[in-house]
Image 1 (tube, rainbow, N blue to C red):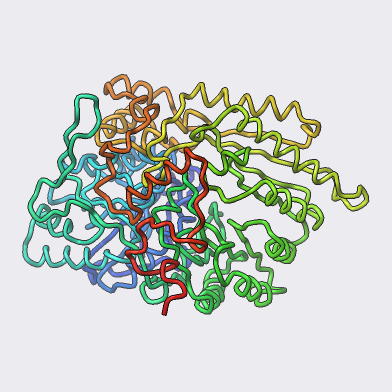
Image 2 (spheres, rainbow, N blue to C red):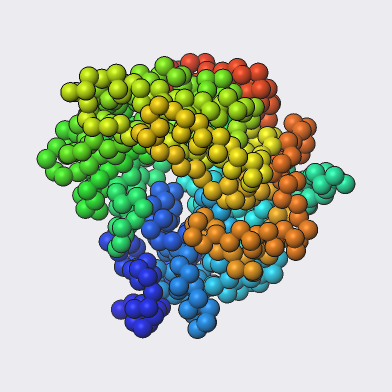
Length: 622
């Protein structure tokens, strides 16, 4: 019988003890003596958030299908347990076996959000693993990173032995086989890293050298070992039937997860080409899953989990070509079975409203629009592909269908933004309110409620805006004030609520998103001063980060305020993410000229993804 790593006394002291005990339905137990590789899959945030991460669940399932691998899970201990573990010198442990992470062969850490970087160091620190890869010995696990932030791994490069670029289904088998072969041959840690560097998609930071110009920009970035590739190629699944790992028995959390439901991934990628969106660029080309397979997976997952909700996962669900058939099936199949259907990322049109009226039981919740910008000019700059007419028509259709709550999401600080663009957010909200009151009073569903939220723009790698400058914290606050005051001046201002994102988080995210290896010193300094759970407003200590910048002498403004030249070597230029630099330069130029680029199904824009010979790039070809 398993012995829990934490005593009953400790479990009674901490919040949500179920986060740390494992043993959930569909979790995998194996005999450690009968496997060759023990892999600890870690998510640098709390259990509830990590258990909602689809990528982590897919890899957990895929790795455990190999008889020679046992994959276990690990999440960041919350601050209460973190304190106890340090005081009592309790080593961090995996959920399934409850055994120390330091005893594993691999520690894999998902980097999904830049503001979790100090939590990555927490996982290493509590595990007793040296924080920097250069200080690790033959006795330490191989530490490998992956996830969306791996598309600029440089700020975290010194802390990882390996970093996986792209979708995990492709190269992990080759990596595990190389590890077993190296061990059988009596090879060293260094021998394995050299072998791993030759596996497609695997980046070994220690094998690359960086030099800098006097102005702080990168002078050169190149491999420092023979046989190490100059470019690391993004890995992706092209055959979404045979190459895709079908997740049919996801682990069921003991406590309510952030996304407490079955998640059905219907496609990868996006055809839209929004110029601020990293996911829409790096996950190209768009690849759809077969509708019949999805139907079967939906039945199986609901049966094996007992969940009462199923969500369709995609960057833009409306663009899935078989959406109507799939949704109709789900409605009919689970009618009367108390299964709710969640449809995020939908464009609001007649079909979407018809579907939502069937799946939203009892009360009609809020409808969500993401115009991103307040004026048509700025929506053209960001290539949103959404007109004011589209928004007002969708809102009008919804209001006539009985909805009275609308959420609107915008960004402030976008390239070329003017005061008119900021005020346009208030004007658009007012027009939507006016559209509601055009409906005869006896047909309205109470008062209209419009929630306006603004986040602040962060330029991301591999987007046309990767060269753009950001603003200071105080500038972002002033922009939010402009919107707030203009909303207060509207006739229907009592129907409009306004919220904005914290500017300090935005500035830090911008620093980490486009940083280079020198930024690692700031992250390490902030962590040692006590920075942890920076993604949580109640635990973010921005003052500690300011101290870290002063202590290391690294300039925050160099990474955030400066517009890059298109000729500058960027920290992530060694990665081939499928979209060419020439395409991104063209789109950066088109943005400043306010030119709209058609979506992938309307016209190929020559982004570079056609070289993969799959997905939307070959639709309609024999």
